[in-house]
Length: 252
Image 1 (cartoon, one colour):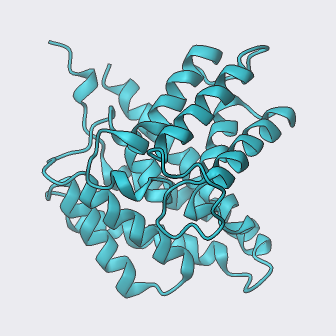
Image 2 (spheres, rainbow, N blue to C red):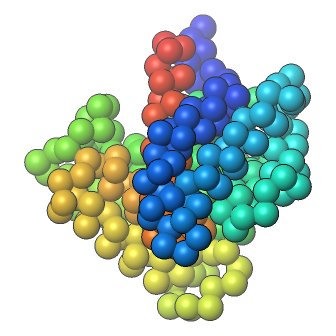
């Protein structure tokens, strides 16, 4: 029987790859931070701490690994960015409760939740609502541009439609008013419009469909609430998606 759809994700490898990517871009991220000039340092530390925590709990369930990493990150790092990712890890732990491993089929939910893009209404569900958003977008990506995620001469409008439909579905019907004081972590109309604008801006500047989707996702997430955080968030999301894709391919 084929097992490609049930292959598990190595969380140590996954987060280690993100730490390496951030380390390679550490100086640029520091320069992008016009406030304290240390965002790159903080992000590298954040994912090094997460990776080490995953190693320490390598034989535990995925939910326990994620929860442990959240606890360690909260205790070892006080930066605003680290707390965003600690919250994302804790939410992901709740989302994957009862699952020994995270499969390459549902790993995209981890990406979305880690970035803080998931609606609070779906935390713990693991299978419905905004948890399916990124997977739906990547399905649209494959349909419009082929499995390599390269640019296509057409299909951008279809992808944007898929993006907006997914984002609207993620609100659960509650986030369609332009509530700028959005305090329940759900997506509102402003989030949807910003995500759509980010998608089209990336496409118009020659970015790939995958880049456009990642930028749209980050723009509507907690990891994108500052320009420098959006920059690092895109690096995090891109790396996670690429490594998950490589893991899925390796199992075929």
